[in-house]
Length: 346
Image (cartoon, rainbow, N blue to C red; front, side, top):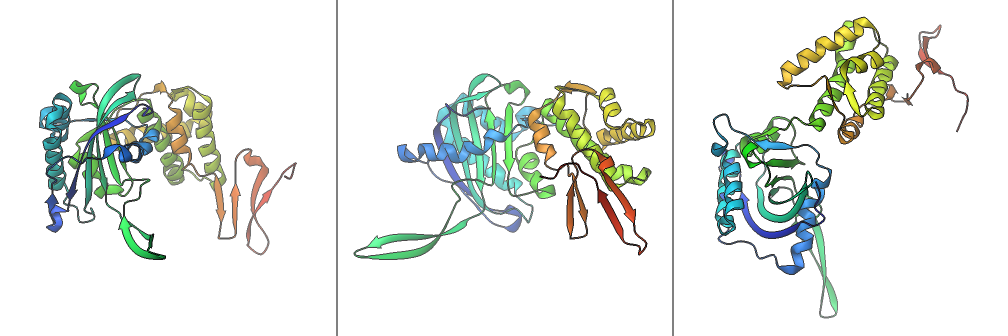
């Protein structure tokens, strides 16, 4: 996904309140005339964060894609640019109807049209839908006559929006290709953006596969293993490191090879395979036993694979390699200790 040549062509702005809190939706009469001075700044504002968005989604609906409101409005925009603004008003109305969770903040809604966006080696047009909810305070200093004045104002951070999606005009019969972001909400209240409003499902590609395999491995080692086996914290860290190492040094995932290299022992392998089956059922996903590994997904997940042994609030021990170089024990006074062996000190 590249936006080096992307250009903003149209933009409409509306304000959407929380219907569940009896707030209102305020629709603009006309498109926003951003002019030459704002074009590049707006393009950076809307598109900059999506450079790192590697997950892909598509519109869906239990009955028919045509019943997915945002899909239909985007389809109308791609088909008739003169109907752009009216469709943005419909998008704002639909977001208002979807905004009922008490934690969702009101904010400005921006619907934009772009040309020359590159995705999957194709150059296509796109519709962007963005929302800002959080205002930041700043001091405005200006000169008046021979003195300076200062006022406190509130505005939008020019480096980020709070929620966004970009709908690429490709594969319309499958629900388009969509990238999304939500910087404010997690958990149940976040679903209103991706599910209630947009009606998206994740595309099952190599990023999706890699992300889930790493996640289920982390959950198994951190949670299930401790329920079924007596496992030292150092053993858990070694297995977490070994898992990430496998994904870093291989281009293709092979489940049989993976469990042999990482877990080795038959009882651990059997336990992992049982947890794998449960994970697929709980998340209602299909995972392949062999697929191309996504480096972007590995990089994302590696951040939460903790290789740190925390001892009270006094010490953090980072374990990156040979577990035999660290020894756990208890002294004659009952105090627990770890003994570290090393060859070189840096």
